[in-house]
Length: 324
Image 1 (tube, helix red, strand yellow):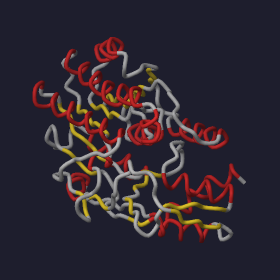
Image 2 (cartoon, one colour):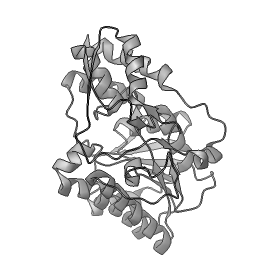
Image 3 (cartoon, rainbow, N blue to C red):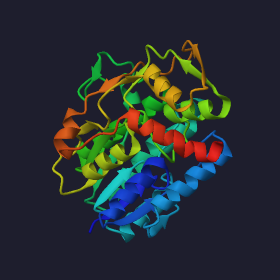
Image 4 (cartoon, rainbow, N blue to C red):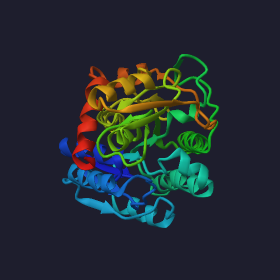
Protein backbone atom coordinates (compact mmCIF):
# COMPACT_ATOMS: atom_id res chain seq x y z
CA UNK A 1 0.00 0.00 0.00
CA UNK A 2 1.35 3.40 -1.00
CA UNK A 3 1.17 6.61 1.01
CA UNK A 4 0.00 9.09 -1.64
CA UNK A 5 -0.15 12.87 -1.30
CA UNK A 6 -2.27 14.76 -3.83
CA UNK A 7 -1.69 18.50 -3.67
CA UNK A 8 -4.85 20.14 -4.92
CA UNK A 9 -6.61 16.85 -4.27
CA UNK A 10 -10.01 18.39 -3.54
CA UNK A 11 -10.14 19.94 -7.02
CA UNK A 12 -11.45 18.63 -10.31
CA UNK A 13 -8.59 16.44 -11.52
CA UNK A 14 -7.34 15.79 -7.99
CA UNK A 15 -10.62 14.18 -6.96
CA UNK A 16 -10.44 11.74 -9.87
CA UNK A 17 -6.83 10.87 -9.04
CA UNK A 18 -7.78 10.40 -5.38
CA UNK A 19 -10.60 8.06 -6.32
CA UNK A 20 -8.37 5.98 -8.57
CA UNK A 21 -5.59 5.59 -5.99
CA UNK A 22 -8.16 4.73 -3.29
CA UNK A 23 -9.70 2.02 -5.49
CA UNK A 24 -6.23 0.54 -5.85
CA UNK A 25 -6.09 0.20 -2.06
CA UNK A 26 -3.63 2.99 -1.31
CA UNK A 27 -3.70 5.45 1.60
CA UNK A 28 -4.63 8.88 0.24
CA UNK A 29 -3.71 12.26 1.69
CA UNK A 30 -5.40 15.32 0.17
CA UNK A 31 -3.57 18.63 0.55
CA UNK A 32 -5.85 21.53 -0.38
CA UNK A 33 -6.58 25.04 0.89
CA UNK A 34 -9.88 24.97 -1.06
CA UNK A 35 -9.34 28.30 -2.80
CA UNK A 36 -12.03 28.89 -5.39
CA UNK A 37 -11.21 30.86 -8.54
CA UNK A 38 -14.24 29.69 -10.49
CA UNK A 39 -16.53 32.28 -12.13
CA UNK A 40 -19.36 29.83 -12.92
CA UNK A 41 -22.95 29.68 -11.68
CA UNK A 42 -23.43 28.53 -8.08
CA UNK A 43 -25.89 25.78 -9.04
CA UNK A 44 -23.20 24.08 -11.14
CA UNK A 45 -20.59 24.67 -8.43
CA UNK A 46 -22.80 22.91 -5.90
CA UNK A 47 -23.45 20.02 -8.29
CA UNK A 48 -19.73 19.65 -8.94
CA UNK A 49 -18.83 19.94 -5.25
CA UNK A 50 -21.13 17.07 -4.30
CA UNK A 51 -19.97 15.00 -7.25
CA UNK A 52 -16.29 15.41 -6.37
CA UNK A 53 -16.91 14.80 -2.66
CA UNK A 54 -18.46 11.47 -3.63
CA UNK A 55 -15.33 10.59 -5.57
CA UNK A 56 -13.22 11.30 -2.49
CA UNK A 57 -15.42 9.34 -0.08
CA UNK A 58 -12.60 6.89 0.71
CA UNK A 59 -10.03 9.61 1.45
CA UNK A 60 -9.23 9.54 5.16
CA UNK A 61 -6.54 12.21 5.44
CA UNK A 62 -7.18 15.88 4.67
CA UNK A 63 -4.55 18.56 5.23
CA UNK A 64 -5.92 22.10 4.99
CA UNK A 65 -2.56 23.64 4.14
CA UNK A 66 -1.54 26.19 1.53
CA UNK A 67 1.44 25.33 -0.64
CA UNK A 68 2.65 28.85 0.23
CA UNK A 69 3.11 27.79 3.87
CA UNK A 70 6.61 26.33 3.73
CA UNK A 71 6.88 25.50 7.44
CA UNK A 72 3.59 23.60 7.49
CA UNK A 73 4.67 21.64 4.42
CA UNK A 74 7.96 20.68 6.10
CA UNK A 75 6.02 19.53 9.17
CA UNK A 76 3.67 17.46 6.99
CA UNK A 77 6.58 15.81 5.19
CA UNK A 78 8.23 15.13 8.55
CA UNK A 79 5.08 13.51 9.95
CA UNK A 80 4.38 11.28 6.94
CA UNK A 81 6.65 9.32 4.64
CA UNK A 82 5.04 9.65 1.23
CA UNK A 83 5.72 7.23 -1.62
CA UNK A 84 4.00 9.29 -4.31
CA UNK A 85 3.14 12.97 -4.73
CA UNK A 86 0.93 14.39 -7.48
CA UNK A 87 1.16 18.18 -7.59
CA UNK A 88 -2.08 19.65 -8.96
CA UNK A 89 -2.30 22.63 -6.61
CA UNK A 90 -2.41 25.67 -8.87
CA UNK A 91 -4.57 28.45 -10.18
CA UNK A 92 -6.39 26.60 -13.01
CA UNK A 93 -7.60 29.55 -15.08
CA UNK A 94 -5.50 31.40 -17.65
CA UNK A 95 -7.89 34.37 -17.56
CA UNK A 96 -7.62 34.73 -13.76
CA UNK A 97 -3.83 34.47 -14.00
CA UNK A 98 -3.86 37.47 -16.36
CA UNK A 99 -6.01 39.47 -13.94
CA UNK A 100 -4.00 38.51 -10.85
CA UNK A 101 -0.43 37.74 -11.99
CA UNK A 102 1.22 38.20 -8.58
CA UNK A 103 -1.13 35.66 -6.98
CA UNK A 104 -0.75 33.34 -9.97
CA UNK A 105 3.03 33.41 -9.63
CA UNK A 106 2.86 32.59 -5.93
CA UNK A 107 0.33 29.78 -6.31
CA UNK A 108 1.97 28.16 -9.35
CA UNK A 109 5.71 28.83 -9.03
CA UNK A 110 6.34 29.48 -5.34
CA UNK A 111 3.96 26.68 -4.34
CA UNK A 112 5.92 24.25 -6.50
CA UNK A 113 9.23 25.42 -5.02
CA UNK A 114 7.86 24.99 -1.49
CA UNK A 115 6.75 21.40 -2.10
CA UNK A 116 10.09 20.47 -3.61
CA UNK A 117 11.97 22.25 -0.84
CA UNK A 118 9.96 20.37 1.79
CA UNK A 119 11.00 17.16 0.04
CA UNK A 120 14.65 18.24 0.09
CA UNK A 121 14.66 19.31 3.73
CA UNK A 122 12.99 16.11 4.92
CA UNK A 123 14.99 13.91 2.53
CA UNK A 124 11.79 12.57 0.99
CA UNK A 125 12.27 9.71 -1.44
CA UNK A 126 8.81 10.09 -2.99
CA UNK A 127 8.00 10.02 -6.70
CA UNK A 128 6.88 13.58 -7.51
CA UNK A 129 4.73 14.44 -10.54
CA UNK A 130 4.48 18.13 -11.40
CA UNK A 131 1.34 18.71 -13.45
CA UNK A 132 2.17 21.49 -15.89
CA UNK A 133 0.21 22.49 -19.01
CA UNK A 134 0.33 22.32 -22.80
CA UNK A 135 0.25 26.13 -22.62
CA UNK A 136 4.02 26.05 -22.00
CA UNK A 137 4.62 25.39 -25.71
CA UNK A 138 3.02 28.65 -26.80
CA UNK A 139 2.01 28.50 -30.46
CA UNK A 140 2.62 24.99 -31.76
CA UNK A 141 5.42 25.13 -34.32
CA UNK A 142 4.21 21.99 -36.10
CA UNK A 143 0.99 20.05 -36.54
CA UNK A 144 1.96 17.81 -33.61
CA UNK A 145 3.75 18.99 -30.45
CA UNK A 146 6.42 16.73 -28.97
CA UNK A 147 8.01 16.93 -25.54
CA UNK A 148 11.32 17.79 -27.20
CA UNK A 149 9.86 20.89 -28.88
CA UNK A 150 11.02 24.28 -27.54
CA UNK A 151 8.74 26.11 -25.13
CA UNK A 152 7.79 29.71 -25.88
CA UNK A 153 4.78 30.44 -23.63
CA UNK A 154 2.90 33.52 -24.73
CA UNK A 155 0.63 34.05 -21.73
CA UNK A 156 1.00 34.53 -17.96
CA UNK A 157 -0.39 31.11 -17.05
CA UNK A 158 1.84 29.19 -19.46
CA UNK A 159 4.88 31.21 -18.40
CA UNK A 160 4.40 30.46 -14.71
CA UNK A 161 3.68 26.79 -15.41
CA UNK A 162 6.93 26.65 -17.38
CA UNK A 163 8.69 28.34 -14.47
CA UNK A 164 7.43 25.48 -12.30
CA UNK A 165 8.93 23.02 -14.78
CA UNK A 166 12.32 24.74 -14.61
CA UNK A 167 12.22 24.72 -10.80
CA UNK A 168 11.30 21.02 -10.84
CA UNK A 169 14.16 20.19 -13.22
CA UNK A 170 16.59 22.16 -11.03
CA UNK A 171 15.65 20.13 -7.94
CA UNK A 172 16.09 16.94 -9.96
CA UNK A 173 19.55 17.97 -11.16
CA UNK A 174 20.89 19.56 -7.99
CA UNK A 175 19.24 17.59 -5.19
CA UNK A 176 18.31 14.30 -6.83
CA UNK A 177 14.57 14.71 -6.26
CA UNK A 178 12.63 11.98 -8.07
CA UNK A 179 10.39 14.32 -10.03
CA UNK A 180 8.85 14.21 -13.50
CA UNK A 181 6.64 16.58 -15.49
CA UNK A 182 3.20 16.01 -17.03
CA UNK A 183 1.64 18.32 -19.64
CA UNK A 184 -2.16 17.91 -19.99
CA UNK A 185 -4.41 19.63 -22.50
CA UNK A 186 -8.07 20.73 -22.67
CA UNK A 187 -9.34 18.50 -19.86
CA UNK A 188 -13.10 17.97 -19.59
CA UNK A 189 -15.64 15.89 -17.72
CA UNK A 190 -18.16 15.95 -14.84
CA UNK A 191 -17.09 18.01 -11.84
CA UNK A 192 -15.29 20.76 -13.74
CA UNK A 193 -15.92 24.23 -12.31
CA UNK A 194 -13.09 25.99 -14.12
CA UNK A 195 -14.93 27.19 -17.22
CA UNK A 196 -12.81 25.11 -19.59
CA UNK A 197 -13.82 24.94 -23.24
CA UNK A 198 -16.26 22.02 -23.30
CA UNK A 199 -17.85 22.95 -19.99
CA UNK A 200 -18.34 26.54 -21.16
CA UNK A 201 -19.78 25.53 -24.53
CA UNK A 202 -22.16 22.92 -23.11
CA UNK A 203 -23.38 25.21 -20.34
CA UNK A 204 -24.08 28.12 -22.69
CA UNK A 205 -25.93 25.85 -25.10
CA UNK A 206 -28.12 24.46 -22.33
CA UNK A 207 -28.87 27.75 -20.61
CA UNK A 208 -29.31 30.14 -23.50
CA UNK A 209 -29.86 27.97 -26.58
CA UNK A 210 -27.19 30.17 -28.10
CA UNK A 211 -23.58 29.14 -28.45
CA UNK A 212 -20.89 31.67 -29.29
CA UNK A 213 -17.85 29.91 -30.76
CA UNK A 214 -14.49 31.42 -31.61
CA UNK A 215 -13.01 30.40 -34.99
CA UNK A 216 -14.37 26.82 -34.87
CA UNK A 217 -12.82 25.83 -38.20
CA UNK A 218 -9.28 26.84 -37.25
CA UNK A 219 -8.99 26.30 -33.48
CA UNK A 220 -8.02 22.76 -32.58
CA UNK A 221 -7.43 21.33 -29.09
CA UNK A 222 -6.34 17.94 -27.81
CA UNK A 223 -9.42 17.32 -25.65
CA UNK A 224 -8.64 14.81 -22.89
CA UNK A 225 -11.25 13.25 -20.63
CA UNK A 226 -10.45 13.62 -16.95
CA UNK A 227 -10.59 9.86 -16.31
CA UNK A 228 -7.87 9.30 -18.91
CA UNK A 229 -5.74 12.02 -17.34
CA UNK A 230 -6.25 10.60 -13.84
CA UNK A 231 -5.20 7.13 -15.02
CA UNK A 232 -2.03 8.47 -16.61
CA UNK A 233 -1.07 10.59 -13.59
CA UNK A 234 -1.64 7.70 -11.19
CA UNK A 235 0.51 5.45 -13.37
CA UNK A 236 3.35 7.96 -13.60
CA UNK A 237 3.22 8.51 -9.84
CA UNK A 238 3.59 4.81 -9.03
CA UNK A 239 7.18 4.26 -7.81
CA UNK A 240 7.15 0.77 -9.32
CA UNK A 241 6.80 2.25 -12.81
CA UNK A 242 10.19 2.89 -14.38
CA UNK A 243 10.68 6.48 -15.51
CA UNK A 244 13.74 8.71 -15.34
CA UNK A 245 13.68 11.70 -12.98
CA UNK A 246 13.21 14.87 -15.00
CA UNK A 247 11.31 13.21 -17.84
CA UNK A 248 8.52 15.18 -19.50
CA UNK A 249 5.30 13.60 -20.75
CA UNK A 250 2.40 14.91 -22.81
CA UNK A 251 -0.54 13.41 -20.90
CA UNK A 252 -3.29 13.81 -23.49
CA UNK A 253 -5.68 11.94 -25.77
CA UNK A 254 -3.19 12.49 -28.57
CA UNK A 255 -5.67 13.76 -31.16
CA UNK A 256 -6.53 17.38 -31.88
CA UNK A 257 -10.19 18.14 -32.57
CA UNK A 258 -11.54 21.30 -34.16
CA UNK A 259 -14.14 23.26 -32.24
CA UNK A 260 -16.67 22.74 -35.02
CA UNK A 261 -16.55 19.01 -34.23
CA UNK A 262 -17.58 19.75 -30.65
CA UNK A 263 -20.31 22.06 -31.92
CA UNK A 264 -21.69 19.28 -34.12
CA UNK A 265 -21.85 16.92 -31.13
CA UNK A 266 -23.63 19.57 -29.04
CA UNK A 267 -26.12 20.17 -31.86
CA UNK A 268 -27.08 16.51 -31.83
CA UNK A 269 -27.83 16.73 -28.11
CA UNK A 270 -29.41 20.20 -28.18
CA UNK A 271 -30.98 20.63 -31.66
CA UNK A 272 -32.43 24.03 -30.77
CA UNK A 273 -29.04 25.58 -30.12
CA UNK A 274 -28.22 28.70 -32.12
CA UNK A 275 -24.53 28.94 -33.03
CA UNK A 276 -22.82 32.31 -33.48
CA UNK A 277 -19.29 32.33 -34.89
CA UNK A 278 -16.91 35.12 -33.92
CA UNK A 279 -13.23 35.86 -34.49
CA UNK A 280 -10.58 35.38 -31.81
CA UNK A 281 -9.65 38.61 -30.02
CA UNK A 282 -7.70 36.99 -27.18
CA UNK A 283 -4.09 37.12 -28.36
CA UNK A 284 -2.82 35.43 -25.19
CA UNK A 285 -4.27 32.06 -26.23
CA UNK A 286 -1.68 30.05 -28.19
CA UNK A 287 -2.43 28.14 -31.37
CA UNK A 288 -2.54 24.51 -30.34
CA UNK A 289 -3.63 21.14 -31.69
CA UNK A 290 -2.44 17.55 -31.28
CA UNK A 291 0.16 16.60 -28.69
CA UNK A 292 2.14 13.43 -29.26
CA UNK A 293 1.39 10.94 -26.48
CA UNK A 294 3.78 8.25 -27.76
CA UNK A 295 6.09 8.57 -24.74
CA UNK A 296 3.35 8.15 -22.18
CA UNK A 297 1.71 5.31 -24.13
CA UNK A 298 4.99 3.41 -23.84
CA UNK A 299 4.62 3.75 -20.06
CA UNK A 300 0.91 3.05 -19.56
CA UNK A 301 0.67 0.22 -22.10
CA UNK A 302 -2.65 -0.68 -23.67
CA UNK A 303 -5.23 1.91 -22.74
CA UNK A 304 -8.37 2.80 -24.65
CA UNK A 305 -8.66 6.58 -24.67
CA UNK A 306 -12.14 8.10 -24.50
CA UNK A 307 -13.49 10.08 -27.45
CA UNK A 308 -15.52 13.28 -27.43
CA UNK A 309 -18.30 11.58 -29.43
CA UNK A 310 -18.93 9.32 -26.46
CA UNK A 311 -18.16 11.54 -23.47
CA UNK A 312 -19.47 15.00 -24.46
CA UNK A 313 -23.10 13.74 -24.63
CA UNK A 314 -22.64 12.14 -21.21
CA UNK A 315 -21.31 15.42 -19.87
CA UNK A 316 -24.25 17.36 -21.32
CA UNK A 317 -26.66 14.97 -19.56
CA UNK A 318 -24.76 15.51 -16.34
CA UNK A 319 -25.24 19.29 -16.64
CA UNK A 320 -28.82 19.02 -17.89
CA UNK A 321 -30.04 17.45 -14.64
CA UNK A 322 -29.10 20.62 -12.75
CA UNK A 323 -29.58 23.38 -15.30
CA UNK A 324 -32.94 22.43 -16.78
